[in-house]
Length: 330
Image (cartoon, rainbow, N blue to C red):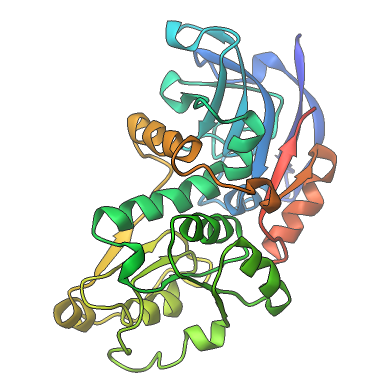
């Protein structure tokens, strides 16, 4: 094979971006040691930013987005990743300035490539993708500092999104009382089917935002929003509890004071799924394939292909996407 199919974004001389499906020479891929036949990818918010030219994500065009990829090794210089090995690639520079999973071939460094965990299929891995991995990373870090099912209700913001929906499902399966924050009241029944015990509107989540401290209520928070919502929930944590921050769609700045930290002994935990060391990524993926394996995972997924990807990008940017979009290259 001398060419492969890809969803490529190009930039015209006047700065206009064009996206579409093209046949790309295999020689266009970077000179990395692992060549993968990509069978599935997934659509994340960061992919949509890349596809629309956000310079904080992608600076060099033409470009193939896709921060997630799952497929079969075709060539490798590492004996632990022999040809025929099912693998996933996630994070680091994949899909940012290195061509990513929206093409049927990628070349990546060994350290970006993880053997598919036993008990997980390629499509399972991409239903989860970076979003599901991030949700699991939040739960893992929150539990490491003491969060437990008997410690009070746990809030998940942006609950209909990729991180949020997996977070709701995982927490519920682990026995937590989950409160889902959503601006989509029409999705309340769907969120309850994932395990949410209560749905809270964005307005309710922001009540009392001008107070120095809120009523101590929450045993933990997974926040995908940032801004005022992050701060309002953090200052309403129970004594000694924690909030895991993994998103900023609601703003990068928080109107913070030191009071919750000094008077409530709370923790603000940062979550980065991109540059986490390979061993840590393998550990979290192994949990998702075993003790954290999600029942009904595929209820979160909508399957799309390269031909429908452009419309899906517009949908996720408009805040209309629910759950996870899995890109099937078959």
